[in-house]
Length: 282
Length: 272
Image (tube, rainbow over all chains, first blue to last red):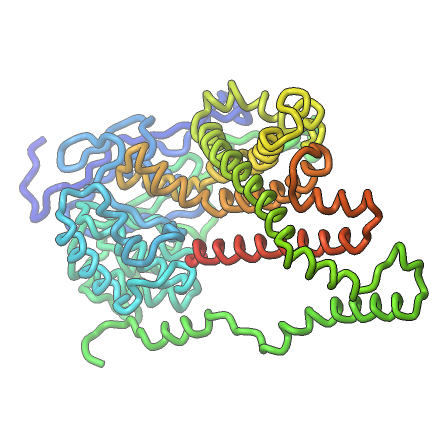
């Protein structure tokens, strides 16, 4: 099959990705968390993955990040299979995971710990990224002194500071209040427009997914599969009141609002009303 | 304000100010002294009015006189110096050994499997149960006392160090993995700082236990001199003034150590 040259080359190539966990409660002994995931992320694009809890989207990110090496299928970055974690893939977790014993700028510098830069270059990169996320004046603050939104901004700076090719974001705004979430979505869009780093965002918020992404990958659970991929062809910065935006958002939302006939829970046995045998959780 | 930036630092500075804890009004500090002062006054009144047998409850005046005598003749300082020297030695040896052993048990699963069960059994032995063995092996003098104090300091340090290391947050360890930290970097830059509060608790407990053990050691391993010996001497010769004086000194030293340790902890935990 010939491939026509597109404007973007594929940065991240996920082919037939699958992940299973051993689980004694399922017949067959294995729980299929992800199945046949085929995803091609062009360089410099923003791809949102949206799905309800349990559809394996966070697992997908962890596999791409390299924290887990056991899976079926292939994950290729710029044509080469990934091996463990690496500086070309950054991440922002849902909890900020800042080191409490380091200041804001030291936390950002954690991203550069093993990077091949001189100390002077590192200082400059850190300062650049403090400015990028709008935290000038807070470089010497401790994590416990700043708000949740600010801490998450530090986490974003840390994820970007060593210039990864792909930034993974695992529900980065899930732990924040609605107002801060809105603000940070705008921030992230601004940062992406400026830096144009490939970003892969996982969220359960459909509006966030459509607001930020060029493509929205809709996933469904049991087992985790891609239901469909929706292209978002709206200009940046996005306008939440734009009728086209609202239409697209409602279109994606409709996937979640009607009761799914094919999201069958047949994989899990019906649990009896009275447990056959008491079992301690630990 | 220029530019399309939606971040507004002024709002965040207000948040920041709201997070600073308020300082208590100064008067409250002195309220803590009301009870002790009242107690001393009651004591003085009881002895003045001769309501209690003066052999059992000596007057504050007599205690003060004895105190002055002990201080002036230098006996207090000699006794205190001897006790503190032993305590410092035992504390340092026990803490150093404890840090090493605790780190080993915390970081190495293999060491934990081999040494762990033995240590867990060992630490169950009540501290003072070691006295007979120590007195037979090391006599009743300074060496025996230092051994005893080292034991007292060792156990809390090992337990807390090991515990602190093993409960380093896995979320932060994952961050270290993501950024390619080597094993050594992970241990020194993530695990140890995360374990520091726990380690400090262990050292703090070691300080307290070794001070308690110092006094106990002087009761039970009676050769030599120290503040505990002063107390024993006083009780044997029925000099209650000496006994009370000794107790006050011991209490004051304990309180001082506590305050020192607290000050140090606050300095090291600025980020909390």
